[in-house]
Length: 452
Image (cartoon, rainbow, N blue to C red; front, side, top):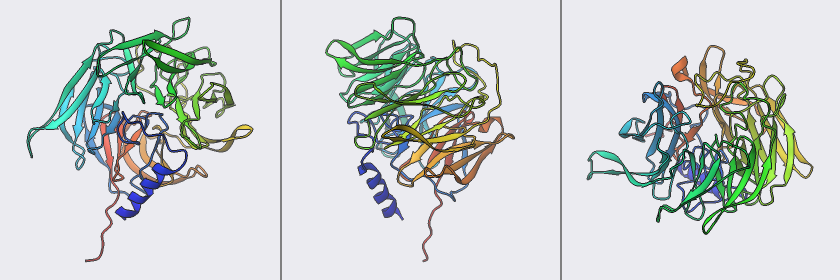
């Protein structure tokens, strides 16, 4: 069984359309919140399957939206205190899911600062409340000794950085709350940034990188940026319909999407976002090289057309999930009032296929997704979490071909089990780590016992 799983993973990495490997990021599938540098929200690994072991809840005293892992297989969870919004980084035992070491970080924005990545040296790259970029390493004091987390490098930015991403040239790209974007050189600590747009803009989501450049979505436009020797070049900018106000179930006034690079050949021919149009939002797919609009199609109906989640992109397929009306217990500072103030969480998932004529709706299902979907390429299923009216949360496996729910495994019931539209991370052994308000859930594949 292990050999089959390894072979399936290897095939998933080699298939046309797989995200291009970034030499300055950790492993594909676990290096970033959205799986890889291009934020495809896919992973080459298979998940825990239809009949996993009983999920184990690990209380960590906060909300855990970012769970990553480097090549050493040790998970890193960046969690935010529920009351004070102060972040803590936890190095987790891969066997138990419990902390081996913890490090408090200075409070920032975006519910404490949730965007981070693991680099090619297994260091967590994130920001603290001062806006500085931190490179955090972990090590062990001798065989069997205590683990520790240590800030190996600190790069002052002097701006309110909200998100970081690994450039393919070794630079660390970042976006700021006041609509600026730029890069930092981790060797020299040189920093360059520029303002995006001619009016105030906000970077409220993560950013994505490809060999062609860095895609940033502000609350008004989508950009492709490249590095110049002494600055940042805007290769293209495309405005979108941001609507009159923030919708319920979204955390900012504008697109709720991290841009998604994907494509059938190189894995980065296209970049997809969703806008904030009313009454129905649109999925917009651009040609990454030129910024030309490949398609713009409405998603869901007026009662559920809104999303805070990044699209899933794989080859010529795009999957979107509705978060309209999702009852977040808090919103970031400066998010503004929602209009309407609240709405029922109806849910819904859709698949679109990129064709010669644009984007065609393949299926639409009423699945009430409460987590960013993740396509497990080696298994050929989509993992997400469903939420019932009784606040019961279940890990769901969904057919990419039909949208049908194939299986569900209960994670928990009640407020502390709320997964808050956070993404689950699948480790190479098939273990899935899903963040929640109270910490995280560990879902392992059921062990296969061979006759003695």
